[in-house]
Length: 286
Image (cartoon, rainbow, N blue to C red; front, top):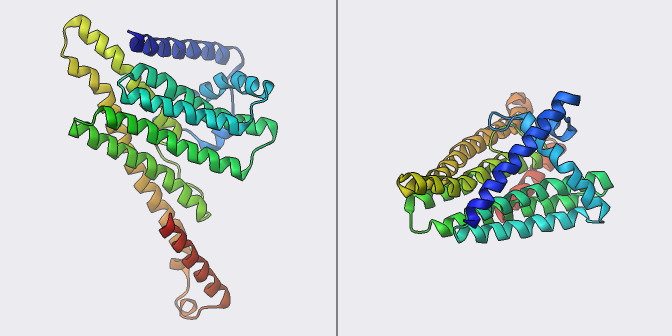
């Protein structure tokens, strides 16, 4: 009953925010955000939904600044809520896990907002934020894997979704490391968070409907399995596409090089090769 209450509260809160934002749009227009304009939208998560989310979190960001919370403190709060969400999911409390995951994801966005508003954004903060993001997703998928440990199909879907999530993030980081504009694609961090939270939040609601109508109880697992399949499929396809685009971008200068120039290495080319070798060693260590 408590789990269902959490899922219903999440649904009602989301509806209330959507209504409030729709009223705001009708009155003064969309809440534009430069970060969203740069990142762009995708088929799975439109710009309007992203703008609504950032608009809803702005009061929370101002509250964090007012009480003196730093961006790093908010990042650590995201880590803590993600760990609690993982435990909840492992125990089968999907409604509670969905709410905790949502709070963790909100903190993940809030830390950047706080850093920008207070002028404390830094490379060190970016490293912490990225690390917390990866751990948060591993907590989520780890909790699901533990709860579904006796179901081979669910385990395979969870592992495939984990691979998709990690590889999308890796492909972006690799492009940035090679100084290539990160290719846009689907199933980025914010999209995964939205769909995964919705998937697990629906489990208690569908279970309650099944119990009242006499439908088979296994139907309650379909939202979870469906969202895992979605993240696994779209995430891995998007990651492969991103890596191919990145590889083509770094290969293009070599393809365009004249044959006679490629036969003679200048000192600058030798230096570049040395740097590439060093980067490859770093990749091996990672």
